[in-house]
Image 1 (cartoon, one colour):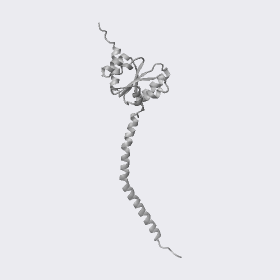
Image 2 (spheres, rainbow, N blue to C red):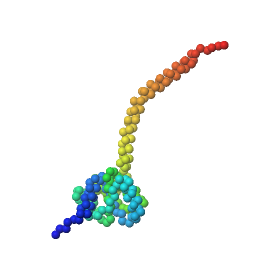
Image 3 (cartoon, helix red, strand yellow):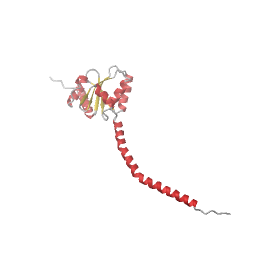
Image 4 (cartoon, rainbow, N blue to C red):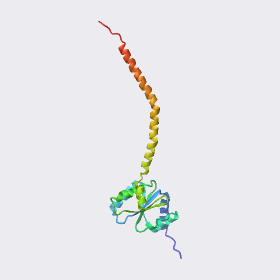
Length: 186
């Protein structure tokens, strides 16, 4: 007789699957040995960065990954596992985790996933070295604004030159008028 899965497990698999499909990138971590104070500080930083960090059961994560056609992470789903879901910025989970690993020695990266590509530790570290989404957008905006600023300056140059010319003519006329006034002798 087959045992039907419990409702909580089905809901957990559904939740993991939904987060996996919405995420641009994920990072699997081992958090064994991290004390409560460090974990609280770490989770707060993750929340502030818009990252959902969830402790998962390996079996349920494996099912959710297989359901959406992702293979290659099974060997990393051993021991305590938490997944950082990068819902809006693919670089943010790797960046936050690697920055906190300096202070939290027990925190370890197991692997990552960018789109459907499995990333080993070196791939996650390389992802962490990329600029954030906001930084890239600022660079793009700067690249767009620089030519527009130059163009505006070019269009403004003739008007400025006319204004300089008119000012020079005005000064010449004032000097000529001041020099042409008759002297009165007594």
